[in-house]
Image (cartoon, rainbow, N blue to C red; front, top):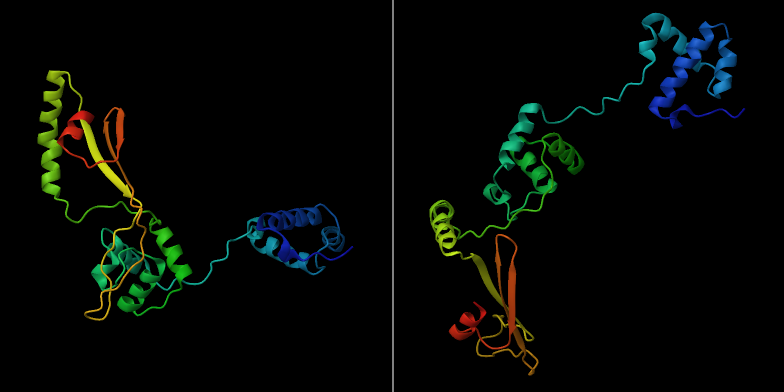
Length: 235
């Protein structure tokens, strides 16, 4: 029989073979014949028998390898969490506003003087319950106080007024699409205005739409500019 490489077996299978082999020997089979039936190295079973006699069958159970000792202790990991929670890398001197494993690696090196791999950073973040997520967009001009006032005071009054009149509240927006690009500014020698080739066939289409909290949706497509008459017609 071709000898089997025990390293190719799973932890569960190796544990099962160890336990079965020791029990077969205790039932009267010869160790050499037992280990030959599994196709493993002849001397392996004697080690299992010694361990079993000294510490019992529990000592034959598979154990997860401890792996390398973490470079950051629990206190330092919690500090990394506090650095990240509710903040972004720009507050620590980085020029990018989203957290990446590389930025966390650089921050740990800068603050703790410890070099950790990007892979280790990923494992640490997973252990801290930090996951990669797509951020929500929030305009920096938004006024939280005004938003809270509108949600808690203004909108309830509007909703009550609509209910009294049997009306519905819609939220409206409009947008436009042009066939030619809007030219911004570019760099050129002073006094030499650059030229950009564009299409002379300019076309544009606009859309206005409104939706309410119940999902009712209305829209209109138009080519002209939005004015008072068109707006009232849409309403």
